[in-house]
Length: 438
Image 1 (cartoon, rainbow, N blue to C red):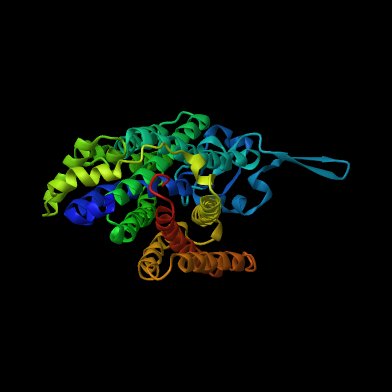
Image 2: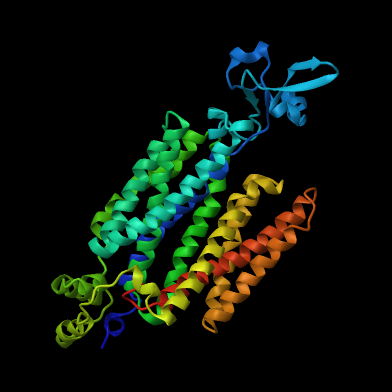
């Protein structure tokens, strides 16, 4: 009898597991904050070159109305109108030599306005976002390996702690390079939390309930997605907003006492006594009894395979290699489209706060639909949702930029499809690979 049968004996999704998922879901809200906050903290407001007469005023703007004329002129954003040189019937545009003046109609301050990441420096803003996302890649490798060696609980606690500390530190970054480095570290912890929270939850849940349990955490992410626009609407200063989304992580310090280790991981690492104690506790909370025969014999059966495994095993056999390549590509497409739509919401030309809220709201029905269609077919569900998301994105290419409502509508349809696909691929990947490779 394997470990999944042991879980069924003690209650595969009882009170113990439901309580565990409450603890797992809380950090997911903070993950959504960190993933999407750059939409607001890194926004580029309307701006124009500062005249010589106003160079001493700093990066402060006057009332939005008094600057509306300059902001409406495309050349005034990056080229000075007062320093134009006329030479032999030729006009030479001169870049802003005295800095920029930014509108405060929407944002009081952003990283762009504080460090002048506009015009020839605009690429630095995109570079900072790319470095942050690369942190997720690094984190998945580093924290994934650490979790296999030190356990899911330890790495999850470490990731939450680092995310909180470095997230708060980013609010006090003295310059842009320091801010990017701090955000990179936060990015690595995102992967540490996502992977280990998901794995810890699924390893405590029986096979029949694993799909439902996995999607529950996605609802928490969607909740954070919807809450962020409201917080950003109330806090228009980027430093205060960064602090507001990071500081609540300190409240999770009680996880040290309530978050359990994975009994499956303990058994796989020959820590049988600790695993049995946890299983006995789970059985007690669920109102079940762990039979003495199960404590020894079944755990021994699970722990017989002493062979070590690594990422190389994903491409060792033709069948596993084929599965891995297909799933890697699907993961790449999902991440690319999901975050492309989510982080590109400011380019749709609609109200940023409202659109971001609706983008978060659309995740709820998308994930709910998955609960109904996924039991029918994993493969058909995955393909259908990818097709819906991809078709909507392609149709956006045919819509002129002066139709923001149509673009937003198609973007939401695409967001619906890719969000549902994202939920499917999590469950699909967990089921299609053997436990030792998962």
